[in-house]
Image (tube, rainbow, N blue to C red; front, side, top):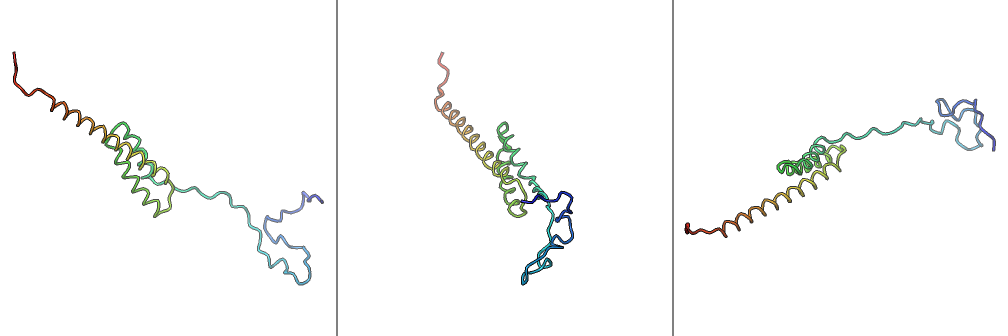
Length: 133
């Protein structure tokens, strides 16, 4: 093992990294090899779909106010369609908005049906007769 010369020029810094190298007879020379390319770093992150963010926020706010949960779920469906067409990020937020929105909407509908059933039961059990003093 021969250590590399720390003062040697960087073969990846440009120019021909194969210059000065000997090659065997019948083998392609340095011009046949592609040049070395530098590291380009990380790919840029995807832009997050705005409707996906709004869907999740409205679905979570729907826990306290019943009207925004179905709006968040519907926006989640629209956001998923846009994400498929444009390739933006935010698919998880859109899916979470759909799931949370419809679950909260279903729970609120069950609560409303429960109250309606109690009111109907109370009305049917009420004494409809006149006053008996």
